[in-house]
Length: 424
Figure 1: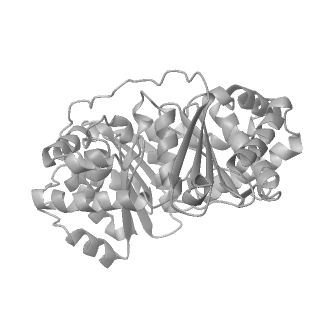
Figure 2: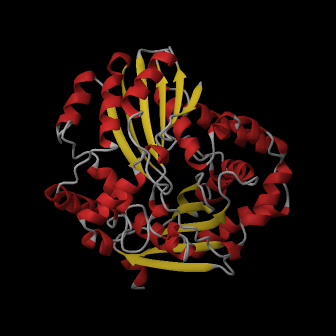
Figure 3: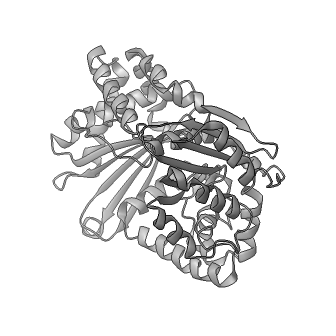
């Protein structure tokens, strides 16, 4: 693999993989909801949408047709710490990806009529999310967990901001963050490195660097007691969410927490674009689902730049209350805090985590994904040493991080109650 930084500050990862005549091309920008403040929440996601509205060279509608004609796929995603755009194409068509991404890094139009049209689309997306009890509950839990840090709000943004942001707000955000010195280009697939590097220089090398984007350092103060939120709404189902403050991706406790997560709720799929594994052997599944405290249970721990959350979520069994399910969940956490897991139990959980990691790394698209993704919150070494660091986790490490991080004063407990429960 070749890593190089162009004179304009663009970091480039190139990895030759000759298993299939494909190339996967990803552009990652260091901008997400972490970089937003009240008044412009959701702006990173909206700017991502505007990138599909075209440039003078690639008008709206032309891009889809151009990719489709090659038999390729493309998409984009915005998250807490980053925004990314990718194309996976036949190897002899990679110039299309290079051309369109380097072009829209600079020349996206943000036409007023397109901004107005996309406002309706993004607001509709927000309103669609609000039809999901799990989204409503997650939003309240996240807001309660972060009162200072900008992880406070959902990536989609607040409706008040989506209704009032202007075209100038969006364009300013675009010009501030969509610059080569705030981006990572990751390309994997069937190419020769030197020839690909020359193509990269021709496509991206002439784009001028911008001023270093502002970063708002607003660390979340320690939480000093358990917080509880209740959300009421339509439906027939009670949802439970328990979110613990968790360390960031480069913290020494992150990998022990990954091991704990695999043991407790089943492994988290760190490749956000892959599928998961069954968690029926996890402790929480056996303690909550098999005993009919919950219909389903799971956990999520994602790598982030700043400390974020380890979240456990359950659909409460119709014959149980949320408090009963929470007590059963707490009982399993207490087991980990009181005694380290047996070595064979931990090894089974680590085997599942390794398998999920392997499934999320095997394709050409996934190889390109990991080069850019790991650079958003750490570096490529974080990815290449992933299995080594996971294997180093001991039962005592798991007990220690359970005692340190899974404490009531470090968590937010959220419950969604349907109208029938509220009216009782």
